Length: 135
Ligand SMILES: Cc1cc2nc3c(=O)[nH]c(=O)nc-3n(C[C@H](O)[C@H](O)[C@H](O)COP(=O)(O)O)c2cc1C
Image (cartoon, rainbow, N blue to C red; front, top):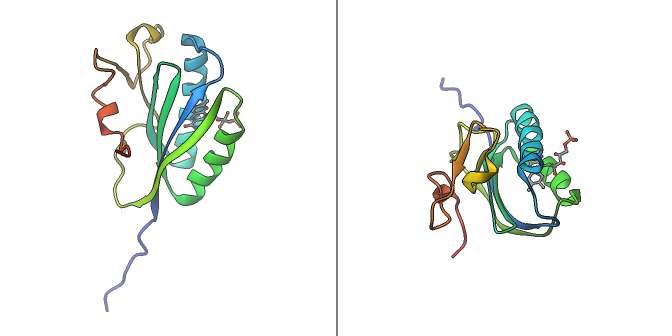
């Protein structure tokens, strides 16, 4: 008799928000460090884009993990005007190898963070092009 494994449900959420204050290298480093530590524990992967004071973040994980992070994100005073762009079940992760990849201006990578992808003249990086956005 065949046995069927229950597939693990995965969800992807993409939101945009605006930084409440201009963020520098240290602020971003702190957000990323904390995010990566927590995300690794929660099984969350994703990508954070920061450009022109606007965040676009994609988070992938189980619905429970996404919901738990979402509750924290909504309370975080470092950003505002938080808008969900997309939230849907997925079968595969797009950022499977990153607990939080990060794309921003090259000058904001003074600490040489691993998983940092500099933006080009078009405001894109090799990872930010994978962000699923609404038209
Ligand atoms: C733009 C932005 C993105 C963030 N991304 C994450 C994230 O991916 N994972 C995470 O745990 N916290 C993230 N945070 C921080 C959370 O809002 C919150 O401060 C943190 O989860 C609290 O964790 P702690 O209880 O361990 O201090 C982000 C904050 C901002 C402003």
